[in-house]
Image (cartoon, rainbow, N blue to C red):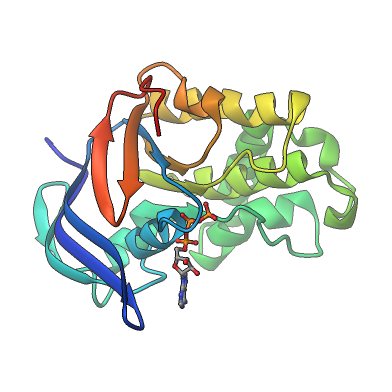
Length: 224
Ligand SMILES: Nc1ncnc2c1ncn2[C@@H]1O[C@H](COP(=O)(O)OP(=O)(O)OP(=O)(O)O)[C@@H](O)[C@H]1O
């Protein structure tokens, strides 16, 4: 497989305003990208389009080198591409139920659900949340539960919207430390962010949105 996801000619407008006008977007397998750009440049909108949560005009697209349409959004991509919100919504249940929600929806057998949830909890370092309620979890814990909830579904592409925004100190570092492990498992990740530590992770490529256009840059380029 040369390319995990490729899109030619993506345009998005809100009312009279052309927000995105992208010639080509190419995401390689097992690769990480940061998506940078000024506030309001369209980072979240682009991630939401890739996740099928927002429509756009697209000339051509492929997934695993096979042609696809993003409208209607195909079931294949619903399974393979997951979007993690900056402020993830937690169900007022247990940590196990929050992480296992998607597995239950997909009809995975209970024993397999329990195994996969336990593995995801260990991965995200949230085992101490057993027996507690989401209203007591910190922002960093909620973000790690959200990452575990996505990873447990074994997606090929994770779209992380500002995963470290509003986090600092160890909470931020714990989230950042999970990203290379996703890559090592063969997943691709696109992270909309302004966080220099995410931008500086080894091997991370930088996609920059500017006036609707998308540029692929050296991740260590300092200028905006
Ligand atoms: N549903 C919508 N209807 C109209 N305008 C919208 C809609 N969604 C987003 N926009 C506008 O599109 C622009 C880009 O928003 P978006 O949230 O994608 O930017 P962003 O780069 O993620 O910003 P930030 O860094 O502040 O999170 C903003 O001007 C926003 O107001």
